[in-house]
Every structure is written in structure tokens, then in C-alpha cells.
Length: 164
Image (cartoon, rainbow, N blue to C red; front, side, top):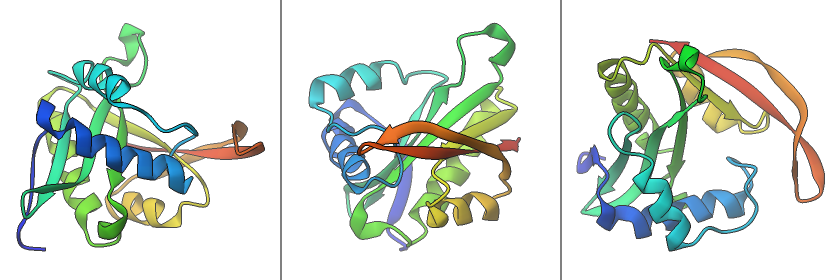
């Protein structure tokens, strides 16, 4: 996908970021969220992702097809160098290398912003996501058993990390 580019998200990207996030919620493969989000939620989220906690989008032919963000891991100052990540790809573009592009860019930026570690939480059944993370050097830390409820069923959550 030679015409795909990665850039810092701007406020006008929020609607497409919202569409892609809601796809992830609907597909039940990437988040414990179950209710679709609205533009008010996404605008507040975006305002909290400035400066150090940045959001990037992947664009293909001037259309946002994926996004990734660095998120606070903890409010405790001892964890200032640790970021949590989110990454969501439009259904039509999954499995085409967009996640790798976003994640590579996100890691480079995390280093520049003085993060030394990125952690993430994924479902053990999300094999495609884990394959990407493993390919880029993330390691399995463990599994929280029955960590959340999704559609009335307990769901395990796998923890992964990468030292930058």
C-alpha cells in the first residue's frame, strides 16, 4: 500500500476515528467496551490525547483507515515512563500492514517522548493482533483470567509489553 501515510491526528479526523473505534467495539476482538461511542465521547478522548499521549492516523488516498494512540498507563508518577497503547484498523484494511506501520511510528514517538516501555492488553483469542505484536518484539507477560465481561461471558485478557 504505497499511498498509505502516517501522520498526527487532527480534530477533523475524529469522526473517522470514531467509526473505526466503533467497528472494533462491534467486532468484539479488541476491547471490552460494548456500547458504541458518540462524537462527544471521542472529542473528550481526543482532548486528553495531546502532547505526550499522541494519536496517529493511517491515511490511504486521503481517507483515515486506522489509528493508534499512546495512553496513560497509571496516574502514579512511578509509571511516567510507561505507556499503554491502542490500535484500531478499519475492517476493510486489516491484515494489510497498516497496524505494523502505525505501531512502528508509535514506538519511535514513544521513545522521543521519554517512554521506556509500552504495555498493551489484548484478548487471548486475538491471534492476528498478537502475531503483529510478537513480530515487533512484544513479549507475553501473563493472562488476567476472567478479567472482564463481554456479552455476558467472562473474558481473559493477555498482557504484553515491550521495552523501548
